[in-house]
Image 1 (cartoon, rainbow, N blue to C red):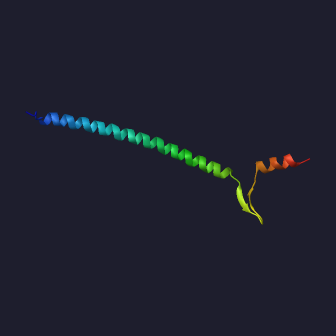
Image 2 (tube, rainbow, N blue to C red):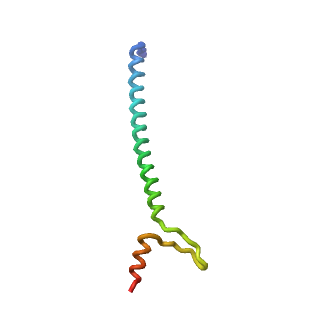
Image 3 (cartoon, rainbow, N blue to C red):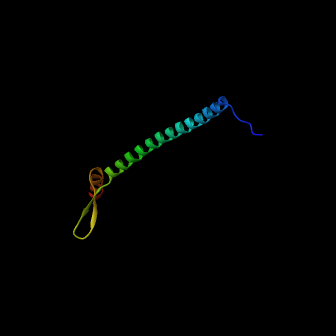
Length: 81
């Protein structure tokens, strides 16, 4: 003989399951926020590295990287007698 549940028992069971779903959604939202912060940090790092990278120029015989700013000054100081 199978036991049938009354309405109160069914409502308590549904309430428990909804609470579990609520916790799962809360955890997923928390992880999404952390991943969004990490994505923003990665994008900022890419922008920073891209800004530091020298421009590529085309010469007559080959392509080369044009050095600008402090790197160029340091390079000139090394080659001065």
